[in-house]
Length: 329
Image (tube, rainbow, N blue to C red; front, side, top):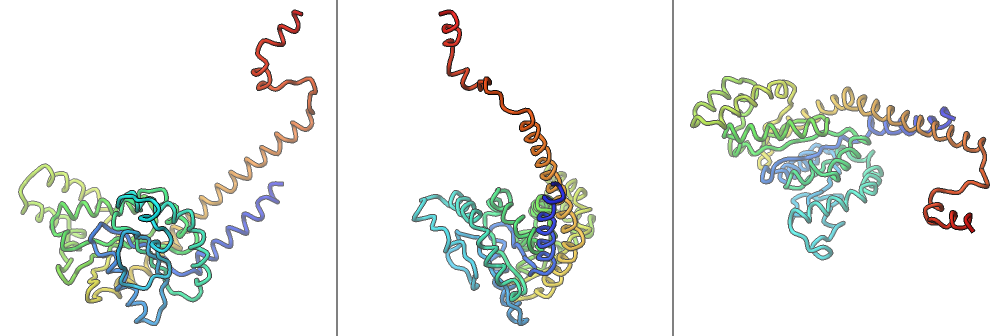
């Protein structure tokens, strides 16, 4: 019985592996509000079209009024939260993501039909980053994409706002938390290079003394000491971190973005996918074992047979003391 049960699971797993190996790379664009995620998606879309490649664009931000790129799937067309629910900004975003999550199988079906015709799938996420990264619906959407197609995360940082060492460290901590939460290949997009060249950020990530010098230039405080300690903790995180210095306005650095995506796809195939398949196999074996135990219990129950004089406990509860009164009479 176990061998029969495992056969469809194995074939399903093989089908998923084949899809993940041959499907279009999916890029989840995350970042703080105002970091330029939507502008980055627009520039990335233009860059891919310029390279004679056709991207598949999904917008998951229900709060945006207008998107500067053609979206294949737009959450605003799916959920009319203003008319139906009358919610505020945060509640509306969470509700839209939850409802979108219930229909995401349809999104995957639509993407699957175009999988052979598109080069990349780019997903724009809400400006309120925590609504996506720390919600159950965001995790389900991310895991569904990553289990079907090679997926990576592009974390967009506003370089102009990150010139302060403390603000920069806050961004890095959030980036690190997303990496360990999703376990997906990850790269930084140091955006708005047309305003401030993000060479300072690269220097801070590769040279602790340069970061410490920048901290010392600021007023000494408890925050500086804490930031210095956290920078040492993140040293290992910096070592393997891919990044690209980008201007979504001018298109500077988009070739570096594509190179970072290629590195992430290699990491997905070599590290994430084997880990996912191992976990999937363990869960399938656990399910098969539970089914086997259940079949054994059913077999034992059938062999014992059914006692006609047996009275269920629930029936005893409803009868109360009537049985005893009948015996006394």
